[in-house]
Image (cartoon, rainbow, N blue to C red; front, side, top):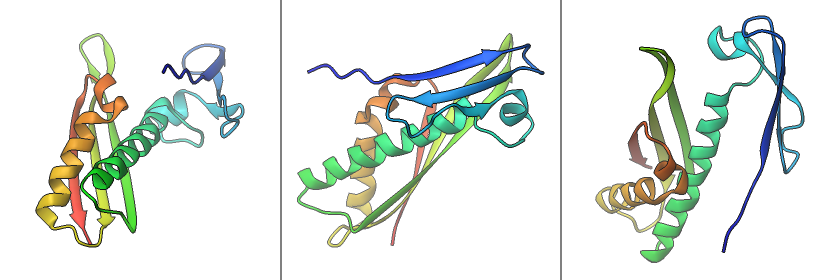
Amino acid sequence: MKIVRRGSAAWSGGIKDGKGFISSESGALARYPYGFASRFEGQKGSNPEELLGAAHAACFTMALSLELGNAKLRAESLETTAKVTLEQVDAGYAVTAVHLVLEGKVPGASPEAFAELADGAKANCPLSKVLKAEITLEVRLV
């Protein structure tokens, strides 16, 4: 089975004074603004790194749900934040790291088993596989 999903971006103007819009096939994002200031200066609007973080957090959390199910466990709640680091390197910028922070409530799971299953999800999530950046994981069972 092959699934293809689409996201799109539009841009006009120069790098610093230009304006862009991000859209998703589902319509969850429809011409949402992004630009230099929202990416590098903390101004209002979106940026590719936060979108990558949201996508990676969602992918990882779904993969963990699968891992838990395979271990005969079911999550009461899982919450993941992905902290995406964008750094200036030799010839420009690069995403150099993704740090996943997971908090879960899983009845019957030990902290050790939970961390092991989370590691498996980190390794097997499709977005983890596509990223070349270092991907780290922080887990807390509550």
